[in-house]
Every structure is written in structure tokens, then in C-alpha cells.
Length: 330
Image (tube, rainbow, N blue to C red):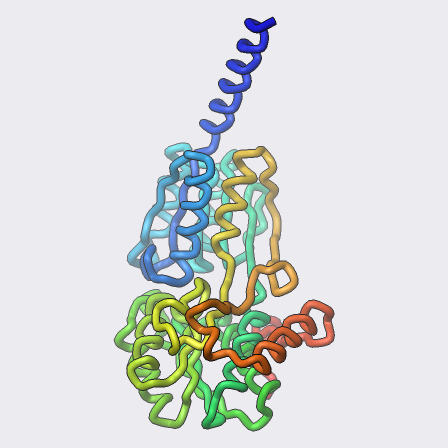
């Protein structure tokens, strides 16, 4: 009896090892660097969580230019990595090509949609999360003027700005919203100096709360706001800790979950392709409240933003999505 139990345990251990060996995760970041304290770093955190829980390591790659993503994705697939996650809309065409070349490999793209039988597409309702932080900005502003600094000028980032503007106007119908985009290439995600310059310009016009949706460029936004004793709003990861008492809140976008869940699903043989859309209701986006910013959020502000959150979930408030028609209601 003892021998048979030991045999069963050994077989179970072998099968677990075999299953784990079939999972060989890879991750390709967007341009802007792994440790941008924002979008890419959220993806890294998800991969690290999977590694810590399972002991299964992963390989990653940090593209420094717009052409390196496809090379990295194809390289990982050709070397047997599976699943391969591409974190950025910029790799849409790359995933379309490479997924067709490697039909037995599982792919995931974050922030875009690729309709292939072996691709999971994860998109977020950034306009909903941005609406929530916009409500807080509108309530926190003493000048009635708030700002937005985006990274690359693309519809996705306009989606952030439009949601933010709607939330700010819901809190203060007379609020004035300034907006600037950093650039039109991938370099716009990694230019904190320019982010700081744009922020200072908005502050000079009277803005006292500035929302950054610009990857590593946003670090310059947060720094400049802190230096000028104004409030900022972080993005993607919880950035409240970067400048405690200056960062009003952060629009948290759970890119970590997209990465962690994809690896976990593949390990457990539960991976499914197709579209996953994550909004406020799914806890895919939200606002951050912790010890670093709790002194900035009054009870009235918290009640207002929680009501906005509940209204979005119930459907009482429908936040306009800029990407639906490339417009933003005023």
C-alpha cells in the first residue's frame, strides 16, 4: 500500500513537472523601459507574481524602438516560448504576423485586438478609470483649472483625456481643462524632461492638478507638479508613493492581471483566445487610495468618486469612449 501511494505521488510530481515544462513564458514590453513605474512595470509585476507563486521563470525584452517588437516576438516564438505576451498597441501588426506563423503558440496582446485563433486580446476601459480621477481632480482644484499630459498622440491616449475631462466636468461644470501630448513617436513615452516642460506651462496657465498618461514621461509631470507644490495624478501603476502628499491619486490599470492570468491559464491548460474587456465593473481600472494620498482625499471627495464608480457599474453614468467616434463631448 505504501509503495503504491509513493508511486502515485511520483507520477503526480512527474506530470506536474511535465505540465510546468510546457509553459515557457515570454514578455515583450512597450517602448519606454521595463521600470517606467507605470504601464510596463505593471506588466513586469504580473510576471514576477507568477514566477514567485509557481517557480517558473520567464524571459522578457525591452524594445528601445518601434521596429524591435516584431523581432523579439518572433524570436521568442521560434525558440519555443509559450505563451508570448506583447504589451502595447504598437505590436498589433507584429502579433498578427507572428501568430499566423506559429499557430501552436499562444499569444497575448494588451491594449489592442488581434482576431486570431491563438491570440488573447486584453483591452481596458481607460475612459472609465480616467473619469473617476477626473472627478477627484475637479473637486480638488482650487483654481478651477486642471491639466492633462499625454504620451504619444494616439486615439488610446485621447481616450484617457476624454474620460478625465468628462469626470472633471461632472464635478465642476465650469472647470477648464488644458491638454498636451508629448509627441507622435514611441519616444514620447520616455521623455520626462519634456513632460516636465509641458506641466510647467499648464501650471503657469493656472492648472493646479495635472494628470499624466505618458509612461516614463509622466515621471517628469509628477516631479514638476511636486516641485511647484501642485497636485498630480499618476497612471497605470499606483504612483502615489512617488511624491506622497503631492500625487492626488493614480488611475490604476491592471496590466499585471492580464500578464499573470495569461501565464496562470496556460499553466493550468485553461488558456482561451479572444477578447477580454476590463472596466470599472471588472476591477480592471480604478483609482488608488492609500496612506500616501489619504490626507488629500476628503470624505466628500471619496463619497463623490465612490458614487461615480457605482453609477458607472450600474449604467447610470455612461462615459463616452473617444475611440468610438474620435470625439469628446464638451
